[in-house]
Image (cartoon, rainbow, N blue to C red; front, side, top):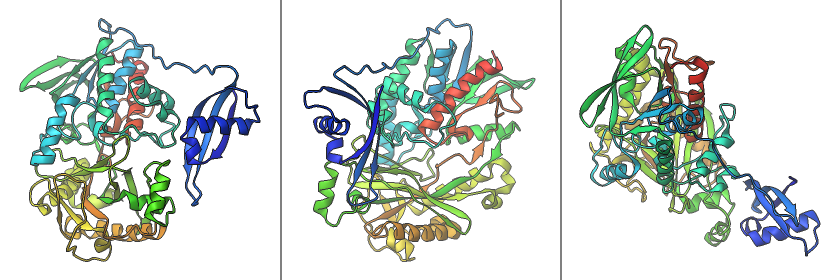
Length: 527
């Protein structure tokens, strides 16, 4: 199938009729020729005021273009002789389950939280009433943290698995086919719940099991194998004999790390990042990134361009300061998983049409920063993370109100007399963020923001707000596994998976890791 790559204007790229005419001109076709086409790649070149769209398009002339239909060979595993218990129904667990079905293995998912529809009530309770359900929140429940964390699908983990297959799986379950060609594909938090339900239906239709409101509370090890697990389902404890276990509990399941530590099973402290959410008016970010000199120009360019984003990184005294999970046209969300903590994250709807842009701006921490908690061994980073989150809770007034400071005031070390409007629904409270973050992170963030302001003119302003804390960028604990067969070095039938084990950082990498962990079941023959 022939392909062509070229640049065009945003107006042409977003209009099928105009794009057909552009293709005809690019290919030197006659006016009477009929062209069929499919976009394979699409990206924005916004380096200059005259913004262009890069396109790679497959096409055919005077003959209909035959496109491959997305199909997966799922098998009925309801009576399969082999099964696999999967702890966690986030991206890692769900994609491990889908792969198990392809392999003829029955997946049995144990999920501590609720399904996506019932979960919404608990999210509303956090936002409106400041009440955190420790089992059902933005991090726990069907789809995991991925369900309510924007749905960004770009990843640098292109060697971990088949990115295209994961994207096709998402399209198969309801995502727009635009994610197959966009450089920075995105689904949107408003559309993810239905997609997650569709994945659940596939798993159940082909004979898998999913148990909600079911929390792993203990397991029994014998001769280097987990032989049974104890699960609390609606306040009743059940014990299940198992032959293997994929552990995909996500980065916030702290009780799992505590359980491993109590049982003296090998886990390790690992680096993680800590910082804040910064929120700007989206119009300001559009103006900066699209080189606009007036509000009218912003409006004109946004007719054919998405809400602008940014990606920033700088080194400050051997600490990396960088943007994380940038959400154009988005909302800051309360992501605490227990009462005495404040945790922020961000998400965007599919249209990215909210008036604010937010991003995590975080500082990379290493084990030398955990020394005050060294008595906790592999949990030292976790205890530091907990301390920051409690600082934020105390500073906000012992509710889900988040501590905040106007950005320019923070950089200048001034107290904010006024705070700009903010999308964070539980509300914000003006504080000196140094008191929440401590000197090390505060100094690093201030210097990082100054550098970002030199790259993006107008970025440092009191129209922008920093909100704390952004603490769940990744897990501070790694559950080790063998590089080849994925087994835990001490527990032969345990396969640590995804973000919670320290091997992923987002929907795509967690999904690919879930598939790889399911493949490892056959590699190890642990049934």
